[in-house]
Image 1: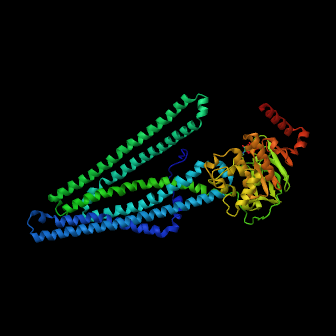
Image 2 (image 1 turned 60 degrees about the vertical axis):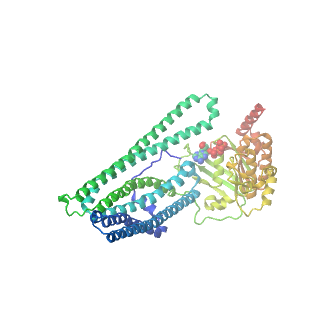
Image 3 (image 1 turned 180 degrees about the vertical axis):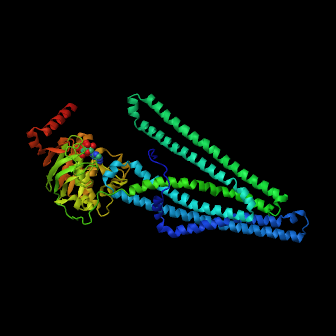
Length: 621
Ligand SMILES: Nc1ncnc2c1ncn2[C@@H]1O[C@H](COP(=O)(O)OP(=O)(O)OP(=O)(O)O)[C@@H](O)[C@H]1O
């Protein structure tokens, strides 16, 4: 996806270039190979003109054409022509092999570097803390791993290599032309600076036009997407006409952008072609003058063969000059992409294991939030005043004993989910500590901590794969019997067996074909199979299921909670009445605590919430 807010180009930056070049280090031999191959290709190129020149001057020279050569002489001349043709062909064969080897090698290097960078980004993304993903849109990260990485490939194949190859070729042509006839060479070079400038100019205009094209295209795409997915709302609110006008505006901008690029494109090729004709014309005029015997050019050594060879060289010199004019643009585009890629790679990992992090094989399941103050905003620190509005949790004290079930309730945004995120150490607290089995989670290995915590998310995430692999999370050590046992336990076995391939049914489009309730039950089964010591359930999903499914989920939840420390977030208070303890939160603080009965008896905030929900329930009935 195009990111209109991101820069496409950046000035050449030697430091960034050095960092990209570092990725070439493991492939130094291949890079040297490309260098040698490019040099050899550059050397073969002007040779074709030389062979033709030799053949023409020796076979069709003035003597041969004047008719004064006898038959034996003619045969000898033909022999020369034949030899020249064979050498020409052989050399073309060599050129084919060289080009094949060069293209293959450079692309192998380019692709390997891409592979390395993609792996580096992926590894980094996996280590980065959740707060990074809160701030960075998914589309942008995907662009890093796809198009930005491709721009680095451009940097290597179209940038660096093209720079080398074009420079070698230009040097080879210029030297051979100067050696064969310096006068004709200088005449031919007159057009080259104009060609370089024109190519630069047109390519820059074309690139701008293409960029504008893709921006306008992405605007049209997102308008289409919005209109198609939101068609119900659009028709309900009668927004068709207004949306049509908006779409037409975007569509027209796309049309204009496309026409703009067509205009430049239509000018580009004819301009190059005219410049080529001017160069050929100049060569023809000057060489013809010399061949036809102008006195002032006597001794210039220009023959018919030289004329034909020069005509060819001039044409061939155009390509590397055009390529060269594009090299710097390619490099600049790659600069912007590399900067963005290194931006991700350099993001500091704030949540990481201490060198002496403790390992815990068995968890009791004691969870203690000890005077916890927490804010998502990274500019908040331990010294930020208590009344700062950026605090999400303000001095939470909550001790949950092993095997105890605690429900967190409160209005939306009160900080319930934040508490569960802190127990898994997805974020670090600014003040106080979160302790599991008496150990600060910051002193534990993250892998160990999370291995013992089972989380049932409100939006159950199903991966591409079978139902079974989704339940075991692709762990081959979990036997099928255990999976079936867990599914029977939470009451989802019959449903799975009714599917086309039972446990081997492929989950499509992240389980779009499964109902919310079914996904929730699968999530419970998954949690059971992983057998965690601490269970976090974010069960808002029950809010959107029917009463029967809710009862089944309720039953499954009770079973899953048995014997383990559980923290449950529920919006439906009926779900959590049976919990050992209910913690009521409001704006980041705990306002009430106790069992369902105790809280009702207190007649405070919980009782109020409870009354409200029952009133709603009655109204709905
Ligand atoms: N990843 C995040 N980055 C920044 N702010 C966040 C993030 N997650 C939550 N918040 C903010 O923190 C506050 C507490 O959110 P939290 O999700 O903990 O509330 P909650 O009680 O679980 O609400 P709900 O019942 O709606 O899920 C809210 O104001 C929310 O906007």
